[in-house]
Structure formats: structure tokens, C-alpha cells
Length: 214
Image (cartoon, rainbow, N blue to C red; front, side, top):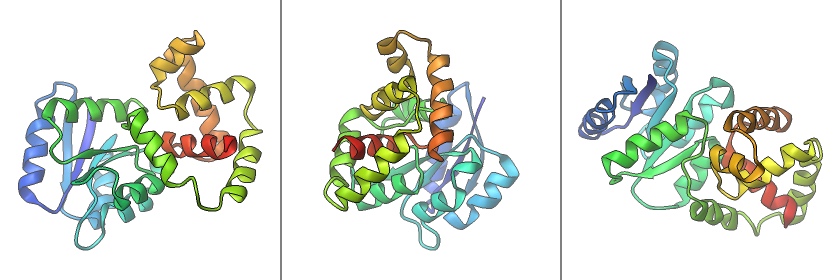
């Protein structure tokens, strides 16, 4: 079962999300919070695999709550937003979110998004990944290029191939098909990549690869 926590300041939204997600036979909604301030306690008490997190909340917003969780928590965050790729989404991705959904996402797509994120993939299409990359492409380019290349030099040739494929927005299964290896092998290599880079976020990996190639 995929254990899911819901964080949104609107009780009706939380109820709707719970109803949708609970309809899937492989998802269990294990807890809720009405503000980002409640996320640490929710995680400590219920140990969710995924948190579906609203970005805009009155006290501690979803961006800060995601940042406070950190990569070491092992919890993947799927942020909810009203607008595609606004500045809040960029900030949430930088803070460590694994992807984002619009609040009017159809139920079936919401359920599938939770499965994708729980499985270790990012819930961003290639077009969204490109938009994120372009958003950060123009600031501090030279310094970012040098830093990115230095970090990527720690990867083996195979790990670098996988990092580049992930940067193109491919899922683990798609990377495996391209490189003629199993999805499990891709996951093993990615674990090593993230360990060497000190991160566990596929989108930030994509940004790093783009910076190195720029």
C-alpha cells in the first residue's frame, strides 16, 4: 500500500482528495493536516510515502513545509497549485518537491500521479521539465556550469548516461528501454547518482545536467 498524507487548509479540498485517493485499492490515506506547520507531526506519526501538499496556506506554506522535510525524510511531495508553472511551483521544486498537479486534475490522473511519485519518478512531463530548465537558464550561468560539471565528473559513464536520460524527462522504465537494461538496474544506478550528488530530486538533477551542457 502507498501511504499518503494530505495537507491543505481547505477542509472540502481535503475531503475530496481523501475520497478520490481512497478509491484506489493500492493507496491508503493515513493522515491530514490543515497547514504546513502540521507536516512534521504528520510524518512522525503516520510515516507516509507521499504527501499531497497545497502550496498556498496561511501560516506555513507548502514550499516551506517541503523544505523543512528535506531529502533525508524519504517522503515524496506532490504539490497542488491553481496555475501551471507559476513562481510558487518553481520554488516548490527547488525546495525538493517531486512534482506538481493542478487542483482540477481528473481523479484518475491524481491517483496515477501518486503512484508515479511513490515509485521514485518525478511527476513532470518533458515539456514541464524543459520549462523549468529554461526558467533558470539565464541567471549565474558560468558559475552554475562550472559547479555542475565538477559534480557530474564524480559519475561513472553509465551513471552519466542515466542522468542525461532522466534530464530529458524519461521515466525509469523509459530509461531502461533506451539503455537496454532493467528498470531495477536504472533504480540502482540512480540511487548511486543521488548519493554522489547529495540529492534525491530528479528535477534538480535535470537542471544540473542542463547547466553542465550549457
